[in-house]
Image 1 (cartoon, one colour):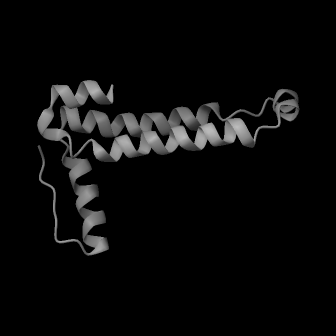
Image 2 (cartoon, helix red, strand yellow):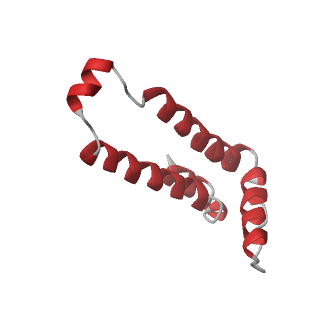
Length: 96
């Protein structure tokens, strides 16, 4: 979906950096917990899965993608500019 949006709106590639990094982070974290931190016996006994929280996280990332596609990345631009100002960067991003 991220690649499709980047082809749909090529001027929004910089704005897609935030949702792309969030997706990479979630993939790495979930892979780590799945491979190294899973106690499969207790998971099956207690029925303790990450399902609803992960679905909420993906909805959060999907909201960024919808902002880029339908709202010309106005909210994403404000968030990225706030982070850049907090870091002290002279760079700024404009809505696409």
